[in-house]
Each structure stands twice: as structure tokens, then as C-alpha cells.
Length: 378
Image (cartoon, rainbow, N blue to C red; front, side):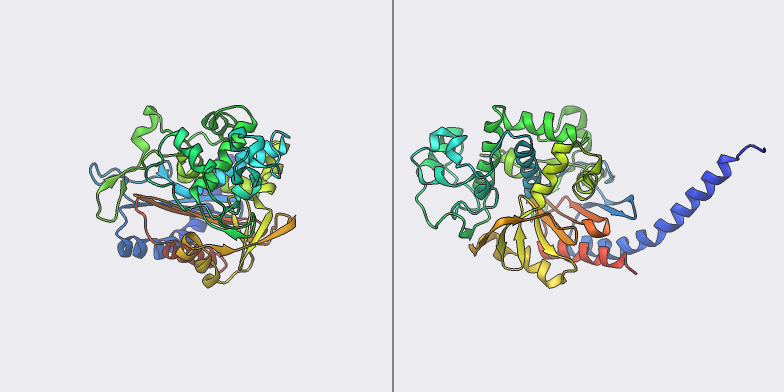
């Protein structure tokens, strides 16, 4: 029997893969290059998962000062997309029997006993529905003591579970409660437990010195260089820095969790379940979901300033709706100098991540991602 000649076969496969990627590159270029020009974005990384394969596209520079090009390993601040990581951490604690999502907050933070917010459930904080907490902490709240006093002195505005007010304090306390339930610091649980289990080796709360060369420079509205500032619950609410390659792995594992350990596999389903109905959107833990197929205008509205800055009537879903394969799951994230968007569709095995070193409008992010994923059907 003649020996199998692997080299020619591998060459044919590589050429076929490269040829298949060429139309995708053109489709992504067609969307991203005009977007960067229109929004004055210095650098972007785009990651797409389709047909069981990851594809990466890099544009512009990570830093205007040194002209270093963006790659799939460049680290971007992902702002509030970090909330999905915090939600996964809490869901994992629930799956491991360490956290009761329906328990009142005071069970895990006894200092909230006697305070109205202490009666709200852990889940309600994770879904921004414990009470109409503000988008940000007041400027005078900086220390952990001031943060706790803020929650203890909060006067009720709504009945628990009746209004959704998107809130860093709400989600931050959610993450804090999840860590307290495990009697470990939040940063330790995030880095040593969740990120390690998901194999996210280039995802950080604090970028180490060894990876500083990969950390992109962000630019504000006046094109001044800027990086995220520390603040109360920064790690829990908006602290993750990651690369396009690690972020796409994170999305893929949420979409296709079979390779994860059983508890973490269960945790991804917990985050994707539906707990509250908010107009056309169903609020999960971290993730926001829409039945698929979904209209672009519906996604644009669901990621609009209205949903971020204004209270929304919400309806508790009891029992929660299970994770839905035929759904568009998404989340935006921003810091002063960065803007990201991530989405995945389990039923179609598609995922996309857009990372930019400039904060630009959510509508433009959603439209770009929708256009790219829609072009994959052609």
C-alpha cells in the first residue's frame, strides 16, 4: 500500500480555507473600514465565529504614539461587557451550591440587615431590578465604607422587581455578594476560578507587567489618551481587559459549552435564562436576549441610551424562561476610551465581537455587527 502523502493534502486544505476566508474578509472590510473613518477610531479588532471556525480581522493602531498595529492579541477594555463575566461567576457559584440567587442580599452581606435593600434578592441586583439604583455611584462615594453606607442609607423608590434601572452599583453589589458567598475576594474568584476554568489566559482585571505591551491605548471624544479609572466595584461592573481571541473563546463557550466542566456548563445556561421581560428584550444575568430572527431596529432600540438611562417597567418571569438556542444574545460595553459589542446566536453557531479603542455610539456597533452576521447568510 503506498504511503499517504500528507503535505499536498494539507496544502490543499490550507488553500481552501484561505480561499473561503477571502469573501469574509471583504465582507468585514466593507463594514469596518467606513465605520472607523466615520467614528474616528484609531484601531479595531473583529472576531467572528462561523461554521465551527474562528476568524480574526485587525485594523489600525493600538496606540497612535508608537503606531503599533492592532492584532487579535491586543488587549482592550470591555467596560460593561464585564458584567457578563461577573454574572457567569455568580451563576457558577449558584451551580456549585455556594450561592442562592433567590436569597435576600442581607444573607451574604449582614451589614444590609435592617436596610430596605437588604430584602432584595441577589438575582434582582443581577438584573438591575432590586430598586431604581443610579447608573453610577455619586462622586463622593469612593471607599468601601462609603459604598456600604450608600446602600444602607438608600431609600426605596420602587417595589422590588418592578422596574429595571441599568446600574453599576446594582451589578457591582451582585458580584460582591457572589464573592462573599464563597468567602473569597472577588478578584481572586474571578481570576483563579472562573477565568482559569474557561481557559481565558489573556483576560485580566489588572493587566500584568508582562502583558502591558499588548494593552491598547484608549482615546476619548477629544482624542486624548485615556485608560479606565478605578472606582467602587470597578472589577465587578466594568473592569475586564481582554483580546479578540480570548473574547471569542468566551462567546463560543457560552454558545457551545459542551467542553466545560458540568457546573460551569450549567452556569452558562443560568446566565442565558430569562428572568425579567423588558419590552422586546428579555433580561438574563449579564446577557440580554431577543427571539431570533430579530429585526435590526429592535436591537438598536434595546441597546439605546433609553434602556441605559431611563427606568423601564419590567415583568418578573416566574419560573424563569430556560436558555433559548434560537435567540440573539448581546451586550455592549464602554469606558472613556473604549467601545465594544458582542453577540452570539446558539442555534446558528455564530458569534461576533467588535473591539475599538474609542467609545462610539452603541447604534453604530449594533448595526455593524448585524450587517456582518447577516452577510454570512449570503
